[in-house]
Image (cartoon, rainbow, N blue to C red; front, side, top):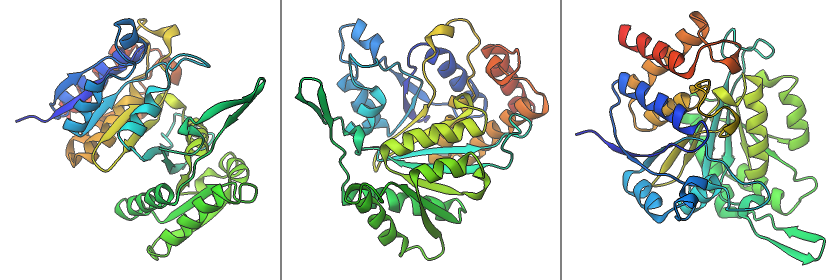
Length: 335
């Protein structure tokens, strides 16, 4: 029997890149039954909540979800679907690998980072209010429970994936209580992993280091807002968000997503780059212990992008979404 997973195609270019990823998964031998749902603005247009209860029920039942990009209104409208999913499903660890693709972007060759971001609290807790007219207050929530939990996840990930070093990133020199607690929890957890090197950097210094010597770092552990910013910075070192994979992991559920936006300006034109969601699919397969299928897709992506140099417009090529996807499938089927 095939496994059933939840699919959120998203909006904008989401349906195009989601379709491409599903086709590649099938070609690699990972045939799933999909429960597909609309969320966000498309759901609202159908008089549904932005994140319908049946979506959460499906993800909880199936345990794994593949998600395309979903537009988040700026400054108004519904809250981010990404944030809601993470909070409702307790997807406390965000995993964002950033690895150089040979020949794609030679400014920073040899980058091989994994960024782990605490996903459920910090400034993204969404606790805001007006103090007086013209003055707003947003509360940053840091707890020992969440900080310890994500630190343990980071060290376990390092141990399971042959990583040697975890660097905590913080601003504890200024936010001595909140970031100080995050750092204290990290150091306490690190004592239980003597085989993994542990150190820390202040966030502003870390950003400078990443644009000077990113090859010096292995894994980074950050609280929510810092992790959101730094993971995008790291993606820029290796070719941009169009090639960046993302996973959100909890105790019982996991959501794998393209981390780029929905790009409504190019939706329907057939030029979207599906690489990010395909790479997220690879993370999903490894999470499901389907490593052979994951490796088939990874090899095909490398062959098409690096060896054949078939690339979409954002990567300097002229291949359409369909042409790029068909090239991936041809390599898988001929291997």
